[in-house]
Length: 423
Image (tube, rainbow, N blue to C red; front, side, top):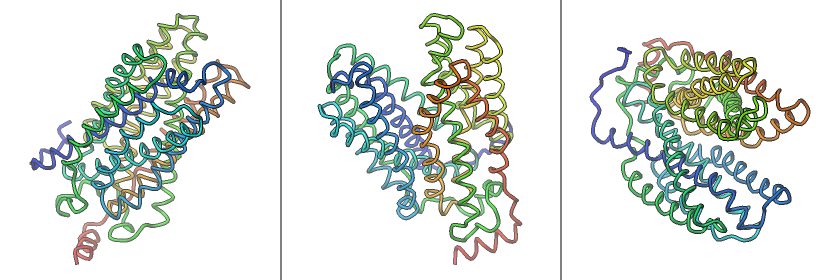
Protein backbone atom coordinates (compact mmCIF):
# COMPACT_ATOMS: atom_id res chain seq x y z
CA UNK A 1 0.00 0.00 0.00
CA UNK A 2 3.01 2.27 0.35
CA UNK A 3 3.29 2.39 -3.44
CA UNK A 4 0.55 5.06 -3.63
CA UNK A 5 2.26 8.24 -4.82
CA UNK A 6 1.87 11.37 -2.71
CA UNK A 7 1.82 13.93 -5.51
CA UNK A 8 0.65 17.49 -4.80
CA UNK A 9 -2.68 17.89 -6.58
CA UNK A 10 -3.92 21.36 -7.67
CA UNK A 11 -7.36 22.45 -6.49
CA UNK A 12 -8.83 22.44 -10.01
CA UNK A 13 -7.82 18.78 -10.40
CA UNK A 14 -9.44 17.88 -7.09
CA UNK A 15 -12.62 19.62 -8.24
CA UNK A 16 -12.45 17.68 -11.52
CA UNK A 17 -12.23 14.47 -9.50
CA UNK A 18 -15.31 15.48 -7.47
CA UNK A 19 -17.10 16.27 -10.75
CA UNK A 20 -16.32 12.76 -12.01
CA UNK A 21 -17.66 11.25 -8.78
CA UNK A 22 -20.91 13.19 -9.20
CA UNK A 23 -21.12 12.24 -12.88
CA UNK A 24 -20.92 8.53 -12.13
CA UNK A 25 -23.42 9.02 -9.32
CA UNK A 26 -25.79 10.57 -11.89
CA UNK A 27 -25.43 7.59 -14.25
CA UNK A 28 -26.23 5.10 -11.49
CA UNK A 29 -29.09 7.26 -10.24
CA UNK A 30 -30.68 7.57 -13.69
CA UNK A 31 -30.28 3.84 -14.32
CA UNK A 32 -32.09 2.87 -11.13
CA UNK A 33 -34.72 5.62 -11.41
CA UNK A 34 -35.67 3.85 -14.63
CA UNK A 35 -35.39 0.34 -13.14
CA UNK A 36 -37.45 1.04 -10.01
CA UNK A 37 -40.13 2.85 -12.04
CA UNK A 38 -40.60 0.07 -14.60
CA UNK A 39 -43.67 -1.56 -13.00
CA UNK A 40 -45.62 1.72 -12.82
CA UNK A 41 -44.37 2.67 -16.29
CA UNK A 42 -45.85 -0.54 -17.66
CA UNK A 43 -49.13 0.20 -15.90
CA UNK A 44 -49.13 3.68 -17.43
CA UNK A 45 -48.79 2.18 -20.94
CA UNK A 46 -51.17 -0.70 -20.28
CA UNK A 47 -48.39 -3.31 -20.68
CA UNK A 48 -49.29 -5.33 -17.59
CA UNK A 49 -49.07 -9.11 -17.28
CA UNK A 50 -47.69 -11.58 -19.79
CA UNK A 51 -49.48 -9.88 -22.68
CA UNK A 52 -47.43 -6.74 -22.13
CA UNK A 53 -44.07 -8.51 -21.81
CA UNK A 54 -43.32 -8.43 -25.54
CA UNK A 55 -44.00 -4.71 -26.00
CA UNK A 56 -42.07 -3.73 -22.90
CA UNK A 57 -39.26 -6.08 -23.94
CA UNK A 58 -38.92 -4.16 -27.20
CA UNK A 59 -38.71 -0.85 -25.32
CA UNK A 60 -36.03 -2.29 -23.01
CA UNK A 61 -34.23 -3.55 -26.11
CA UNK A 62 -34.36 -0.02 -27.53
CA UNK A 63 -32.68 1.31 -24.37
CA UNK A 64 -29.93 -1.29 -24.76
CA UNK A 65 -29.40 -0.58 -28.45
CA UNK A 66 -29.22 3.15 -27.72
CA UNK A 67 -26.64 2.58 -24.97
CA UNK A 68 -24.35 0.54 -27.21
CA UNK A 69 -24.69 3.04 -30.08
CA UNK A 70 -24.06 6.05 -27.82
CA UNK A 71 -20.92 4.47 -26.36
CA UNK A 72 -19.48 3.82 -29.82
CA UNK A 73 -20.48 7.03 -31.60
CA UNK A 74 -19.20 9.43 -28.93
CA UNK A 75 -15.58 8.25 -29.13
CA UNK A 76 -14.54 10.44 -32.06
CA UNK A 77 -16.17 13.50 -30.46
CA UNK A 78 -14.17 12.90 -27.28
CA UNK A 79 -10.88 12.69 -29.14
CA UNK A 80 -11.69 15.81 -31.18
CA UNK A 81 -13.22 18.16 -28.61
CA UNK A 82 -12.28 16.60 -25.27
CA UNK A 83 -14.54 15.22 -22.55
CA UNK A 84 -15.79 18.51 -21.09
CA UNK A 85 -18.19 19.69 -23.85
CA UNK A 86 -19.49 16.15 -24.43
CA UNK A 87 -20.16 15.56 -20.72
CA UNK A 88 -21.75 19.00 -20.33
CA UNK A 89 -24.26 18.36 -23.12
CA UNK A 90 -25.04 14.82 -21.94
CA UNK A 91 -25.26 15.81 -18.25
CA UNK A 92 -28.01 18.28 -19.15
CA UNK A 93 -29.82 16.23 -21.79
CA UNK A 94 -29.72 12.83 -20.04
CA UNK A 95 -31.82 13.84 -16.98
CA UNK A 96 -34.28 15.66 -19.24
CA UNK A 97 -34.69 12.61 -21.50
CA UNK A 98 -36.43 10.58 -18.80
CA UNK A 99 -39.15 13.20 -18.17
CA UNK A 100 -41.10 12.58 -21.44
CA UNK A 101 -41.35 8.88 -20.50
CA UNK A 102 -43.64 9.95 -17.67
CA UNK A 103 -46.08 11.49 -20.17
CA UNK A 104 -46.10 8.97 -23.05
CA UNK A 105 -49.08 6.71 -23.59
CA UNK A 106 -48.22 4.99 -26.88
CA UNK A 107 -45.71 2.31 -27.78
CA UNK A 108 -43.80 4.15 -30.52
CA UNK A 109 -43.32 7.32 -28.49
CA UNK A 110 -42.12 5.23 -25.57
CA UNK A 111 -39.75 3.33 -27.87
CA UNK A 112 -38.34 6.56 -29.34
CA UNK A 113 -37.65 8.17 -25.97
CA UNK A 114 -36.29 4.87 -24.66
CA UNK A 115 -33.71 4.80 -27.45
CA UNK A 116 -32.83 8.44 -26.70
CA UNK A 117 -32.45 7.64 -23.00
CA UNK A 118 -30.09 4.77 -23.82
CA UNK A 119 -28.14 6.81 -26.38
CA UNK A 120 -27.38 9.56 -23.85
CA UNK A 121 -26.61 7.02 -21.16
CA UNK A 122 -23.99 5.25 -23.29
CA UNK A 123 -22.46 8.54 -24.43
CA UNK A 124 -22.22 9.96 -20.90
CA UNK A 125 -20.79 6.73 -19.48
CA UNK A 126 -18.03 6.64 -22.10
CA UNK A 127 -17.28 10.37 -21.74
CA UNK A 128 -17.03 10.14 -17.95
CA UNK A 129 -14.73 7.13 -18.17
CA UNK A 130 -12.50 9.07 -20.56
CA UNK A 131 -12.52 12.05 -18.18
CA UNK A 132 -11.72 9.70 -15.30
CA UNK A 133 -8.63 8.48 -17.18
CA UNK A 134 -7.64 12.12 -17.77
CA UNK A 135 -7.91 12.84 -14.03
CA UNK A 136 -5.96 9.67 -13.25
CA UNK A 137 -2.97 11.01 -15.18
CA UNK A 138 -2.61 13.83 -12.64
CA UNK A 139 -2.85 11.48 -9.67
CA UNK A 140 -0.42 9.01 -11.33
CA UNK A 141 -2.37 6.03 -9.98
CA UNK A 142 -5.61 4.22 -10.65
CA UNK A 143 -8.66 5.94 -9.13
CA UNK A 144 -11.29 4.49 -11.48
CA UNK A 145 -12.76 2.00 -9.00
CA UNK A 146 -13.72 4.85 -6.68
CA UNK A 147 -15.60 6.55 -9.52
CA UNK A 148 -17.55 3.38 -10.26
CA UNK A 149 -18.35 2.96 -6.56
CA UNK A 150 -20.34 6.19 -6.77
CA UNK A 151 -22.36 4.63 -9.61
CA UNK A 152 -23.57 2.01 -7.13
CA UNK A 153 -24.16 4.65 -4.44
CA UNK A 154 -26.20 6.89 -6.76
CA UNK A 155 -28.24 3.94 -7.93
CA UNK A 156 -29.03 2.89 -4.37
CA UNK A 157 -30.01 6.37 -3.14
CA UNK A 158 -32.12 7.50 -6.11
CA UNK A 159 -33.54 4.02 -6.64
CA UNK A 160 -34.86 4.14 -3.08
CA UNK A 161 -36.26 7.63 -3.70
CA UNK A 162 -38.05 6.52 -6.87
CA UNK A 163 -39.41 3.43 -5.10
CA UNK A 164 -40.79 5.68 -2.36
CA UNK A 165 -42.44 8.02 -4.89
CA UNK A 166 -43.99 5.18 -6.90
CA UNK A 167 -45.66 4.06 -3.68
CA UNK A 168 -47.75 7.26 -3.88
CA UNK A 169 -48.16 7.39 -7.68
CA UNK A 170 -49.13 3.89 -8.73
CA UNK A 171 -50.70 4.65 -12.12
CA UNK A 172 -48.12 6.92 -13.74
CA UNK A 173 -44.41 7.77 -13.45
CA UNK A 174 -45.07 11.39 -14.42
CA UNK A 175 -44.26 12.78 -10.96
CA UNK A 176 -41.34 10.45 -10.03
CA UNK A 177 -39.56 10.84 -13.39
CA UNK A 178 -40.14 14.62 -13.51
CA UNK A 179 -39.07 15.37 -9.93
CA UNK A 180 -36.00 13.14 -9.98
CA UNK A 181 -35.07 14.14 -13.53
CA UNK A 182 -35.02 17.82 -12.53
CA UNK A 183 -32.98 16.95 -9.42
CA UNK A 184 -30.36 15.23 -11.58
CA UNK A 185 -30.40 18.18 -13.99
CA UNK A 186 -29.39 20.47 -11.11
CA UNK A 187 -26.56 18.08 -10.22
CA UNK A 188 -25.40 18.15 -13.85
CA UNK A 189 -25.39 21.96 -13.90
CA UNK A 190 -23.15 21.97 -10.81
CA UNK A 191 -20.48 19.41 -11.66
CA UNK A 192 -20.14 20.27 -15.39
CA UNK A 193 -18.43 23.54 -14.39
CA UNK A 194 -15.50 21.67 -12.78
CA UNK A 195 -14.54 19.41 -15.68
CA UNK A 196 -11.09 19.43 -17.30
CA UNK A 197 -10.62 20.80 -20.82
CA UNK A 198 -9.04 18.83 -23.64
CA UNK A 199 -5.59 20.37 -23.12
CA UNK A 200 -5.57 19.95 -19.33
CA UNK A 201 -2.89 17.24 -19.19
CA UNK A 202 0.11 16.76 -16.89
CA UNK A 203 3.69 17.32 -18.00
CA UNK A 204 5.17 14.43 -19.93
CA UNK A 205 7.91 14.08 -17.30
CA UNK A 206 5.32 13.33 -14.60
CA UNK A 207 3.30 10.89 -16.69
CA UNK A 208 5.67 7.89 -16.45
CA UNK A 209 3.17 5.79 -14.48
CA UNK A 210 1.38 4.95 -17.74
CA UNK A 211 4.38 3.26 -19.32
CA UNK A 212 3.22 -0.22 -18.29
CA UNK A 213 -0.04 0.23 -20.20
CA UNK A 214 1.38 1.56 -23.48
CA UNK A 215 3.24 -0.24 -26.23
CA UNK A 216 6.14 1.35 -28.07
CA UNK A 217 4.52 1.55 -31.48
CA UNK A 218 1.67 3.70 -30.14
CA UNK A 219 3.49 6.68 -28.65
CA UNK A 220 3.01 9.74 -30.83
CA UNK A 221 1.29 7.78 -33.61
CA UNK A 222 -2.24 7.42 -34.86
CA UNK A 223 -4.57 4.56 -34.02
CA UNK A 224 -3.01 1.19 -34.85
CA UNK A 225 -4.63 -2.07 -35.88
CA UNK A 226 -2.97 -3.76 -32.92
CA UNK A 227 -4.64 -1.35 -30.49
CA UNK A 228 -8.00 -1.82 -32.20
CA UNK A 229 -7.77 -5.60 -31.85
CA UNK A 230 -6.80 -5.29 -28.19
CA UNK A 231 -9.78 -2.99 -27.54
CA UNK A 232 -12.14 -5.47 -29.20
CA UNK A 233 -10.71 -8.27 -27.07
CA UNK A 234 -11.03 -6.20 -23.89
CA UNK A 235 -14.60 -5.36 -24.86
CA UNK A 236 -15.41 -9.03 -25.37
CA UNK A 237 -14.09 -9.85 -21.88
CA UNK A 238 -15.98 -6.91 -20.39
CA UNK A 239 -19.07 -8.27 -22.17
CA UNK A 240 -18.61 -11.49 -20.21
CA UNK A 241 -18.37 -9.51 -16.98
CA UNK A 242 -21.56 -7.57 -17.69
CA UNK A 243 -23.44 -10.72 -18.75
CA UNK A 244 -22.40 -12.35 -15.48
CA UNK A 245 -23.69 -9.34 -13.57
CA UNK A 246 -26.96 -9.46 -15.52
CA UNK A 247 -27.37 -13.13 -14.62
CA UNK A 248 -27.38 -12.21 -10.92
CA UNK A 249 -29.46 -9.05 -11.34
CA UNK A 250 -32.18 -10.69 -13.47
CA UNK A 251 -32.24 -14.28 -12.20
CA UNK A 252 -30.32 -14.31 -8.90
CA UNK A 253 -33.37 -13.94 -6.67
CA UNK A 254 -35.31 -16.63 -8.53
CA UNK A 255 -32.29 -18.97 -8.48
CA UNK A 256 -31.78 -18.73 -4.70
CA UNK A 257 -35.52 -19.03 -3.99
CA UNK A 258 -36.17 -22.07 -6.16
CA UNK A 259 -32.87 -23.97 -5.88
CA UNK A 260 -32.57 -23.70 -2.11
CA UNK A 261 -36.30 -23.48 -1.21
CA UNK A 262 -35.97 -20.16 0.60
CA UNK A 263 -38.39 -17.27 1.04
CA UNK A 264 -38.59 -14.40 -1.41
CA UNK A 265 -37.16 -11.99 1.17
CA UNK A 266 -34.12 -14.22 1.82
CA UNK A 267 -33.51 -14.56 -1.91
CA UNK A 268 -33.81 -10.80 -2.33
CA UNK A 269 -31.31 -10.33 0.47
CA UNK A 270 -28.82 -12.46 -1.47
CA UNK A 271 -29.00 -10.07 -4.43
CA UNK A 272 -28.71 -7.05 -2.11
CA UNK A 273 -25.60 -8.57 -0.54
CA UNK A 274 -24.17 -9.04 -4.05
CA UNK A 275 -24.68 -5.32 -4.82
CA UNK A 276 -23.29 -4.26 -1.43
CA UNK A 277 -20.19 -6.42 -1.87
CA UNK A 278 -19.58 -4.83 -5.28
CA UNK A 279 -19.78 -1.35 -3.72
CA UNK A 280 -17.33 -2.26 -0.93
CA UNK A 281 -14.91 -3.84 -3.40
CA UNK A 282 -14.82 -0.69 -5.48
CA UNK A 283 -13.95 1.40 -2.44
CA UNK A 284 -10.69 -0.55 -2.02
CA UNK A 285 -9.99 -1.35 -5.68
CA UNK A 286 -7.80 1.68 -6.36
CA UNK A 287 -5.55 0.99 -3.37
CA UNK A 288 -5.10 -2.61 -4.44
CA UNK A 289 -4.33 -1.54 -8.02
CA UNK A 290 -1.72 0.96 -6.77
CA UNK A 291 -0.08 -1.73 -4.64
CA UNK A 292 -0.17 -4.70 -7.03
CA UNK A 293 -1.01 -3.36 -10.52
CA UNK A 294 -4.21 -3.38 -12.56
CA UNK A 295 -3.56 -6.69 -14.33
CA UNK A 296 -2.83 -8.57 -11.10
CA UNK A 297 -5.97 -7.20 -9.41
CA UNK A 298 -8.15 -8.18 -12.40
CA UNK A 299 -6.73 -11.72 -12.25
CA UNK A 300 -7.41 -11.91 -8.51
CA UNK A 301 -10.94 -10.53 -8.97
CA UNK A 302 -11.70 -13.06 -11.70
CA UNK A 303 -10.42 -15.85 -9.44
CA UNK A 304 -12.67 -14.66 -6.57
CA UNK A 305 -15.63 -14.64 -8.98
CA UNK A 306 -14.94 -18.23 -10.03
CA UNK A 307 -14.60 -19.25 -6.36
CA UNK A 308 -17.89 -17.53 -5.49
CA UNK A 309 -19.81 -19.22 -8.30
CA UNK A 310 -18.29 -22.60 -7.43
CA UNK A 311 -19.41 -22.25 -3.80
CA UNK A 312 -22.92 -21.25 -4.97
CA UNK A 313 -23.21 -24.25 -7.31
CA UNK A 314 -21.76 -27.00 -5.11
CA UNK A 315 -22.79 -25.66 -1.67
CA UNK A 316 -26.38 -26.78 -1.85
CA UNK A 317 -27.70 -24.45 0.88
CA UNK A 318 -29.04 -20.91 1.08
CA UNK A 319 -26.08 -19.88 3.28
CA UNK A 320 -23.49 -21.03 0.75
CA UNK A 321 -25.56 -19.47 -2.03
CA UNK A 322 -25.53 -16.08 -0.30
CA UNK A 323 -21.81 -16.42 0.49
CA UNK A 324 -21.12 -17.27 -3.15
CA UNK A 325 -23.09 -14.25 -4.34
CA UNK A 326 -21.12 -12.01 -1.96
CA UNK A 327 -17.78 -13.31 -3.27
CA UNK A 328 -18.99 -12.96 -6.86
CA UNK A 329 -19.98 -9.32 -6.25
CA UNK A 330 -16.69 -8.61 -4.47
CA UNK A 331 -14.70 -10.06 -7.35
CA UNK A 332 -16.78 -8.42 -10.05
CA UNK A 333 -16.50 -4.98 -8.44
CA UNK A 334 -13.12 -3.86 -9.81
CA UNK A 335 -13.02 -5.65 -13.15
CA UNK A 336 -14.89 -3.11 -15.30
CA UNK A 337 -13.24 0.07 -13.91
CA UNK A 338 -9.70 -1.33 -14.11
CA UNK A 339 -10.14 -2.71 -17.63
CA UNK A 340 -11.63 0.58 -18.84
CA UNK A 341 -8.77 2.45 -17.17
CA UNK A 342 -6.26 0.24 -18.98
CA UNK A 343 -8.06 0.84 -22.29
CA UNK A 344 -7.91 4.62 -21.83
CA UNK A 345 -4.26 4.65 -20.76
CA UNK A 346 -3.00 2.43 -23.57
CA UNK A 347 -3.15 5.32 -26.06
CA UNK A 348 -4.09 8.61 -24.33
CA UNK A 349 -4.42 10.52 -27.62
CA UNK A 350 -7.26 8.20 -28.65
CA UNK A 351 -8.67 7.37 -25.21
CA UNK A 352 -12.21 8.34 -26.22
CA UNK A 353 -12.23 6.03 -29.21
CA UNK A 354 -10.71 3.13 -27.28
CA UNK A 355 -13.04 3.43 -24.28
CA UNK A 356 -15.97 3.82 -26.70
CA UNK A 357 -15.13 0.51 -28.40
CA UNK A 358 -14.75 -1.35 -25.10
CA UNK A 359 -17.91 0.17 -23.65
CA UNK A 360 -19.94 -0.48 -26.81
CA UNK A 361 -19.10 -4.17 -26.79
CA UNK A 362 -19.65 -4.32 -23.03
CA UNK A 363 -23.05 -2.61 -23.27
CA UNK A 364 -24.12 -5.17 -25.86
CA UNK A 365 -24.31 -7.51 -22.87
CA UNK A 366 -27.62 -5.77 -22.15
CA UNK A 367 -28.80 -7.18 -25.49
CA UNK A 368 -27.09 -10.58 -25.65
CA UNK A 369 -27.24 -11.45 -21.93
CA UNK A 370 -31.01 -11.79 -21.44
CA UNK A 371 -31.37 -13.83 -24.64
CA UNK A 372 -28.49 -16.18 -23.75
CA UNK A 373 -29.74 -16.66 -20.19
CA UNK A 374 -33.27 -17.39 -21.42
CA UNK A 375 -31.93 -20.09 -23.78
CA UNK A 376 -29.91 -21.69 -20.97
CA UNK A 377 -32.84 -21.73 -18.53
CA UNK A 378 -35.29 -23.00 -21.20
CA UNK A 379 -33.10 -25.84 -22.48
CA UNK A 380 -30.98 -26.88 -19.49
CA UNK A 381 -33.00 -25.74 -16.48
CA UNK A 382 -32.50 -23.13 -13.80
CA UNK A 383 -29.97 -25.30 -11.95
CA UNK A 384 -27.53 -24.89 -14.88
CA UNK A 385 -27.77 -21.09 -14.93
CA UNK A 386 -24.76 -20.27 -12.74
CA UNK A 387 -22.39 -22.28 -14.92
CA UNK A 388 -22.72 -19.41 -17.41
CA UNK A 389 -21.10 -16.68 -15.25
CA UNK A 390 -18.62 -19.28 -13.97
CA UNK A 391 -17.31 -19.92 -17.50
CA UNK A 392 -17.40 -16.25 -18.57
CA UNK A 393 -15.43 -15.04 -15.53
CA UNK A 394 -12.99 -17.94 -15.83
CA UNK A 395 -12.12 -16.76 -19.35
CA UNK A 396 -11.81 -13.18 -18.10
CA UNK A 397 -9.43 -14.16 -15.28
CA UNK A 398 -7.28 -16.05 -17.80
CA UNK A 399 -7.05 -13.60 -20.69
CA UNK A 400 -7.87 -10.20 -19.14
CA UNK A 401 -4.49 -9.66 -17.43
CA UNK A 402 -2.64 -10.70 -20.61
CA UNK A 403 -4.42 -8.01 -22.64
CA UNK A 404 -3.82 -5.34 -20.00
CA UNK A 405 -0.06 -5.85 -20.06
CA UNK A 406 2.22 -4.48 -22.77
CA UNK A 407 5.99 -4.40 -23.29
CA UNK A 408 7.59 -1.53 -21.42
CA UNK A 409 8.94 1.32 -23.47
CA UNK A 410 12.62 2.13 -23.63
CA UNK A 411 13.15 5.52 -21.98
CA UNK A 412 15.19 6.88 -24.90
CA UNK A 413 12.40 5.94 -27.34
CA UNK A 414 9.80 7.57 -25.10
CA UNK A 415 11.85 10.79 -24.77
CA UNK A 416 12.27 10.91 -28.54
CA UNK A 417 8.55 10.35 -29.14
CA UNK A 418 7.67 12.99 -26.55
CA UNK A 419 10.01 15.50 -28.20
CA UNK A 420 8.46 14.78 -31.61
CA UNK A 421 4.94 15.21 -30.19
CA UNK A 422 5.87 18.52 -28.54
CA UNK A 423 7.43 19.76 -31.76
